[in-house]
Every structure is written in C-alpha cells, then in structure tokens.
Length: 332
Image 1 (cartoon, rainbow, N blue to C red):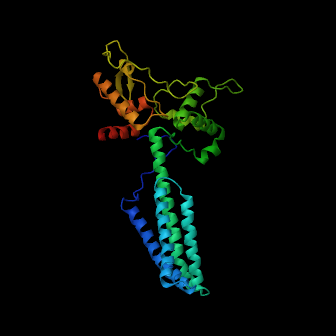
Image 2: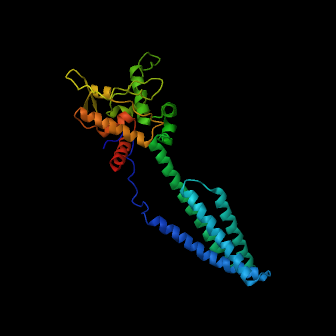
Image 3: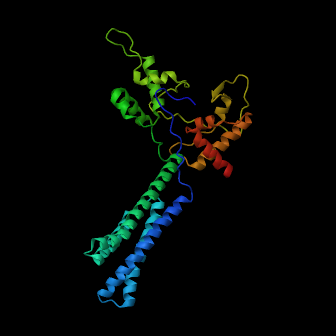
C-alpha cells in the first residue's frame, strides 16, 4: 500500500473494541449499584417517614414510590438515548430525584462526617454511573445515525482534517486548499491535485518573468501516481449520464472505443446503454441497490462483470460503500 510523502498510514483498528456481551454486562453492573443504593435510600426514607408521623404501611409506600420512580425514569431515559435522543428532561428528573435522596441521606447521618459519607456514597455512585452510561449510549446512537445518513447520501461525508502544523507552516496555501474542500465537498488530495494542475498549466511569473515552481506545500502530490483529473466546471458534481432505451442494447463493435476504469476495458456502447444514476443527495439504499442490479444486467449483455471500481465511479461513492451495497443485494 502506497502512502503520500510526509504522511503516516492510518492507525490500526484498536484491539480493545468492546465485545457484544460487555455492554449489557456494564449496564447490569450500573443497575446493580442502583439497587444497592436504592435499598439503603428506602430504609432511610422509611425511618424518616416514621419519625414524621407516617403509619408503617404509609411509610413503606412513600419509600417504595421514591425508588420505583427513579428506576422508571432512568429506564425511560435509557430507551430515549438508545434512539439517539438526548432526553435531557427525563435525565434531569432522575438527577433531581437522586439528589433529593442524597440530601435525605445526609440529613439522616448529620452531624457525623463518617456517617454522612457512608450514607451519601451510594447515591453519588448511582448518579455518576447513570450519567456515564447514558452519555455512552447517546454517543454510540448518534454515531450510528450519522454513518447511516452518510451511507444513504442524506449527509455529506466528513472532510479530511488538516493538521495544525500545515496551517502554521503554509497558512495561505493551506487556506486555498481548505476553501476548495468546503466549496467542492472533495477530499484534500483531490483539491491539491487540481491546484497543482492549474499551477503547472498557468504558472505565475516572478519579478524577473520566470515561472514560479509549484509551492512546497503542494509538491508531495507530484510523487503520487494518479489518474487524469476530470474537467472542472462551475459545479464539481459530474453530469448524469443520459437515459437510454433499455429494451434494445447495441452490441459493441470493433469501431467502438474502450474506456479503462480500474484496469478494466469497457466498451463505450456500455455507457450509452446505462440509465441515469440516482441523485447522490436524494437516493436511498434501495435506489443504489436497484441501480447496481441494472448495471450488472447490462454489463453481462456486453460479456463482462462490473468491478467495484466501475460501480463506485458510476454512483460517485467509495468502493467500501459498493461492497456494503452488494452485501445488501445478496442478502435480499
């Protein structure tokens, strides 16, 4: 695998990825802490209720209601965060009720510092453990939703990050590339190659009338073997291929020219027979799978199998996305 000069390969996937059973086990441990803390809280509230004139059965109901309410609201907050919603209102209710139990624990042990610490510890453990659990679930749910929206074309993929050192060492050149990345929604290496191509075709002249060399901040792209850049227009989005009559497909002839995509020679007549690709920002996963099915059918009429590179070129996406769509197609 080749890497750009001056860059490092992406770090390997961490081997400490949580296993399937670890997350339920962690949730169970947190709720086990909750049950222990709520049991102590129940005894404290029960004793305080008796102290303030409640009958024994009424005191038991008051203590039980407080603990059941905390568990019920906590479970509801857990369900909301797993759907990607923050549920701040429900979480705030759980925190306030837990803090109320915390204050009652302190009151029951006052003025002994050791007693107050022992009574307050269960409630504090529950509050912190519960919030940590909900934040983790919310973060994972939002990440899954964001990845699904990117895969469906409803959200643009995140752009490459530019290191702080590049901004410090070459601020003007880095800003030019960053601006084009934002406007074109293209990765940094693509934008840099465009800037280098424009510079080499029409280099600026110095005071002596000599063409200036390509800036050092962009020279790394010259050592990377890349395919020719497409013609750039006002919009970087490639125009859709014109629809063709799918009932009759012209057989390729010797006079047809071939295109080479990903090392595969493809007759020009194949592209003429293709229907228009679904729009990137509006298509669904089903639309992409249907288009791949149609492209595969037409390709077989021309006696070849479409490669992942070709499908990625036609759908304007990555090869990993094509692999996922093909898996969905096989599963269907």
